[in-house]
Image 1 (cartoon, rainbow, N blue to C red):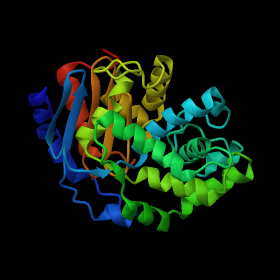
Image 2: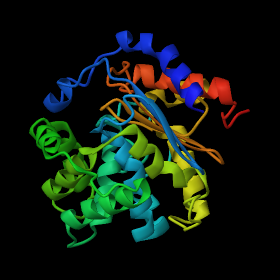
Image 3: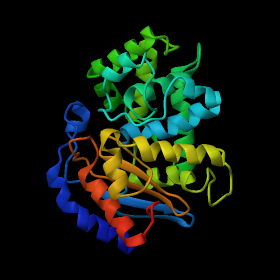
Length: 305
């Protein structure tokens, strides 16, 4: 597996030149576009290559873990507030919210994730407790207690977060937000600012490849049926209006973040995490997606094989 990862990075490296970093968030604009790392976490441990041990802002990848936590808290009632369909639009589109009465298309676009965060906070709940629940899950599954929110990134996102606040106010107007807007979006900015390395992220997401269980201990993290449904949402919606292209080329459930990370799940095999900050026009890591495609070409792990 080590050789496969190394080969995948070599194949993907030229693609860095075809993207650009997320410069609309000042703290992310300073990250070098030359970074490229990958890690795989299987039942027997973790292997990595390139810049796989350097922490980066996981951004929207956090939505996968928040979804798991919110479903544990409120169950299937969550689906009354957010859909499960691909959006076909950008991750921060406001058009669909107006035409669809404040119900986001899915939990992996920005408005859907804000609803999920709001549900995890709960009525008269604590935003700090919701973020602590996320960190507890990530620390436990990665095996690293040092994982934390990068407060500089969170502050940078808040300072430039007018559009996300607009999305939240739209949903509030339609009665689909329980908490005050600033509490919900404040927690959302902080969850996106969690910093992790590829190695940590792959290990943290590994339970989704094994029907919700930690393959080393056998402990159930989430029920098997929930893991499969989260994977299905990732496959359909994990890359916004680039989700079909990612499914076509990679063939794995995945979630991208504008920090340049991608978490991909190979059911029955393990989790892959890749990081390269230069993004394509849809906000997905250009070299990261190419690296995952190269891994699948060499392993045959696509769910369509």
